[in-house]
Image 1 (cartoon, rainbow, N blue to C red):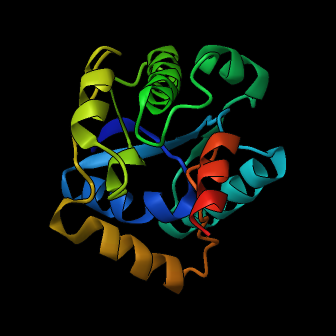
Image 2 (cartoon, rainbow, N blue to C red):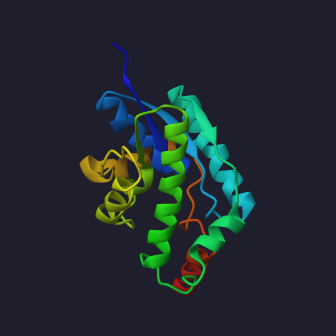
Length: 180
């Protein structure tokens, strides 16, 4: 009997590395999905996708790239642009990306999906689980557990992956510049 297919919403190459290893350990066959219309600018999105392709190649996995629609994403978070990191804008962003991933999983008849977002120590896994559970057959996995974040750093170095310094949207970029 083959492994259970699972659509893995991926935010970037580094976060996907240890998440993929964990999914293999759990008996899943991940199919990578990169939507992420929140990532700004488009060149940053392309750079993150190109690094995800390196990861897909390393693990011999299929990768699907969704349509980049930053204008639609901006409309979704409208009115929340000035929210602090981890605030309502981020929750709306998680919902946007997870609903998109759930739809892709449904369209491909893949029963399960999850996200690499939980590997980050900067993301609230409980909030992500709550949002994910509203979007179909979401599998709750906190990828930062069992040393997942540290392992993602190790694998990123091994694979010579680009590691970004901000979440992705122009508003998280703004918060980054305020810390300097």
